[in-house]
Length: 267
Image 1 (cartoon, rainbow, N blue to C red):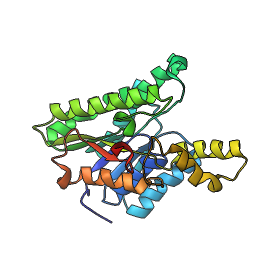
Image 2 (image 1 turned 120 degrees about the vertical axis):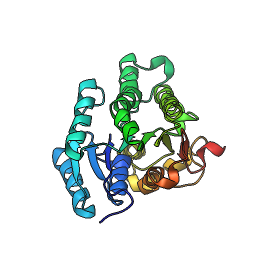
Image 3 (image 1 turned 180 degrees about the horizontal axis):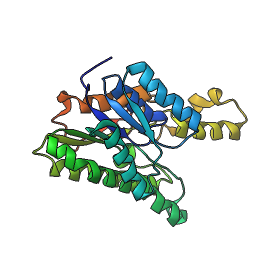
Image 4 (image 1 turned 45 degrees about the vertical axis):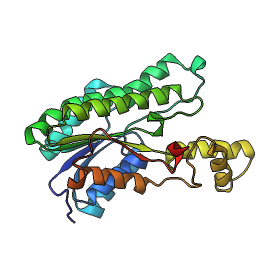
């Protein structure tokens, strides 16, 4: 179909559903070829990949790299280079979360969380940045969170990892400041994805009510420390930020925390 990203290619981790798939579809709508990555049912992943190609007339491929495995991250990047001949855009979106009081937080989970939420992004940046610098054009986007700025109860690991990814974003942006490569973070508030769906289902089950009947109550109980307006942020709203950051208009955005949080951080 064509758009301002015609001829560009993107690698998007954690993109088989939710925000990551939203990124992929939004970039593809502007003509960008995409490599999807993530976990899920094989038929659902293939359906999502095929839909990107069919809907937008781009090339979409898939690699199932586990972000905890350093060798698989390199294999994913190699696959994208082979498929597209280059990588112009990297979106580090893969993430995991676990809730527990800090004194009970399992070290194994903590280390896995940092591997997925932080180290995988650093490694992917290492693999793609040289070619971006050589072409003097590139876009690196890290999905952070409002938890890169504030926190919530029982999220010590998630909050620490998201502060770390924000630090990586700023350092990378400063090191590329005189080039055509930008690095920024997108910081969503509460988005209705598979992760939030699981929480809503648990909330509804505990109250013996259908899921859709407890949405307002669920949002109300999050109000004291979450987004101030009473709805979820949409995947499309988050993906639109990535499109902007990949545009020429976003060239002066360097090390920014692009926050889309429904008023969470204004309190």
